[in-house]
Image (tube, rainbow, N blue to C red; front, top):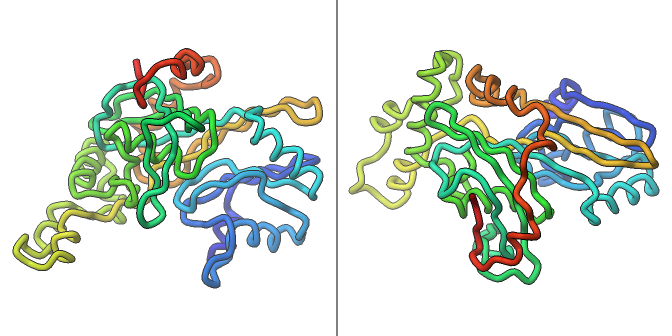
Length: 292
C-alpha cells in the first residue's frame, strides 16, 4: 500500500541525489514492521546505496532529499548542518496567532511523551522566520526555519497560540479546530467531497456527556482532521557549483487542495524575495518570541 503511494509521488533525479515529495503518514525509517520512506525508495529504485540527507516528521509532507552514495550524502548533509540550504514550509492553523509575522526563537527543551517546548533561554536557540495570511477563518503560514530542531515549526506555531491544524501532539486537533475547518469547507463548497473530515455536529451528538469518564471527555474535545497541515514547500542550495531550486505545492489535504488556499499560495511565487525579518537583529532582543 505504502509502496504504491511512493510510486505515485513526485520524484526527481539529479547526478548526486534524489528529491521526492514525501506523502504524509510515512515515516523516515522502518518502525514496528512498517517500512519507512528510505526502505520504500530503495525497493522501488532497486538501489540500497541511497541515504537521507535530512528528515521530515511522519505527518509532514513535502520535499525530502536523499543522497546517492555516502560521499554525495555527506556533502548534502554538510550543507544542511552549515545552514547553506534555504528551506521554506507551508502550514495552516485554525487559530489566530499572537502576531502575524516575525521571528520565533528560543532553546528547545524536551517535555513529556516525546514533545518539545520553547524556552526563554537562547544558548542554542531554534530560529524560525514567518509570515501569515488570512484564509477565510483559517490562516496560512509561510515559514523559513534557520535551524533544524526536532518539531521546530510545530513548537514555534504552538508558541504563537496557533498550532498546526491536525497536529494532535501540540493542540491542533481540538473540536474548536474541527469546527473552523468545517466552516472553511462550507465556504469553499467542498464539504461534500471531504468525507474524512468529521462534521462537528455529528461528533457532538456521538460524544459522551461531560459527566462521563475522562476518556469520554477527551473524545468530546477532539475531532478527526484529515491530516496535519505542514508541508516542506521549497528548497534552494548550491551543490558542486550548480544552483538548485525545487518547489512543490502540497497535493493532499482538503485545505491544501482548496481553491481558497491555492489562490493565496499563487501570490507567494518568489518566497526568497520576501522581506524576511533580520535574524541578527532579533537575536539581540530579550523576549522569546519577536514578531512584527
